[in-house]
Image (tube, rainbow, N blue to C red):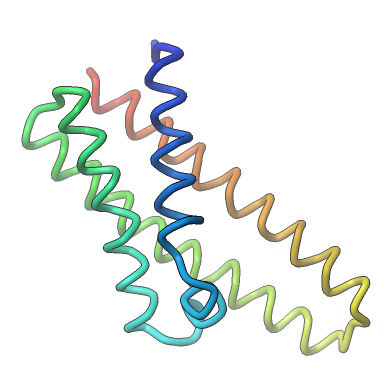
Length: 126
């Protein structure tokens, strides 16, 4: 079972790494530029690595959690934002729909990121 403190720390680390440390340019280009996507993956993994060390995980758990999350996060961002761009361009949607689908995509993206984080942290504590 994850404590409330750990939940808050996971949310905080994710918010900092996926929102504050990600530039607008990085967010716009990560689905189409592999170099940008890999840089984003590194930015995501380092705060998570620090959190795992703070939670006193074993070295093996820290490496596994950070590596798995790096891979899953960049794959998810590549495909979900790539799909969004294709959906938007193919449908030639008006601004209202662009905003609607953009916010819907962010909600789905963040929900999946957090579910993966909670699963990895839960199994990392075992």
